[in-house]
Image 1 (tube, rainbow, N blue to C red):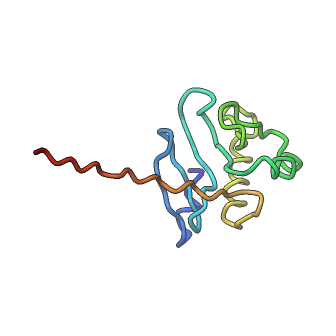
Image 2 (image 1 turned 90 degrees about the vertical axis):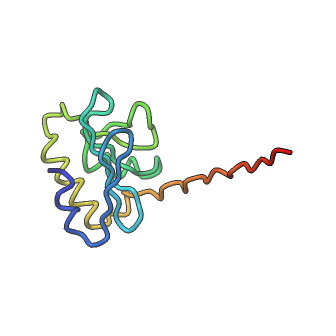
Length: 117
């Protein structure tokens, strides 16, 4: 339900990442929603560390992700999970500049051509 509002955006793309649902808008990765064991159970907010303070000022229940420290994390166990997750989806749709990261380009593997003599 968290990503449903984003699905209506013409520039929305959905991909699987870490066994979770990743939401892209305009090619930028905004949110990852996961329903697994902690710390992969909640919403990962894709941002950079220099934007953490601005987001934390508005949403004190976000935490630095314990594995991916560059991102913030909203655990599903948080009392205000539903309200905060909805706010994060709204911020993503509004293209809030505190959210969104450019994904790393996929490395192409060079094919090894061997000729046998």
